[in-house]
Length: 195
Image (cartoon, rainbow, N blue to C red; front, side, top):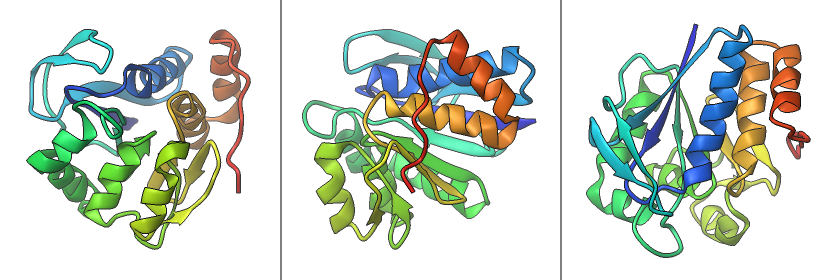
């Protein structure tokens, strides 16, 4: 069983987390040995998204996650990633997960939080098109594509690219047939990695 945790925080972009969550949970329903959960950066509680939706999470990140995904939101304006960078809790969680061997990843500007930890330095990665220069300046080898799989680092471009990354993770940890079945069920035309 592959355990995937998507870490949410006030101001995260709704689709950055919810779309991959739906893809991964749908795959599990079709037989993929993948368990996916939304977890709160600061533990259990109510989280308010960048668009005002409220969700309740039961717990914070665990030490048993095989994959830890960070959504974006609040990098260009508002609260979200920039606030989490100031608080330093989420960067420490990402660093600890990576140090213990988990795959760490991001959707959209969540990559900028990964970059702040140094994890993306010298590594192939992507983010939202408007943050590519910032990611490049952080030392990452920027790939302008929908998503990038660089082994223990996976990143997706802006917002809906998280769907393509999640389908790729289904293929990586389950199989291509289940990934294709999920894509058909959610009526999504897949776009594969750029390099």
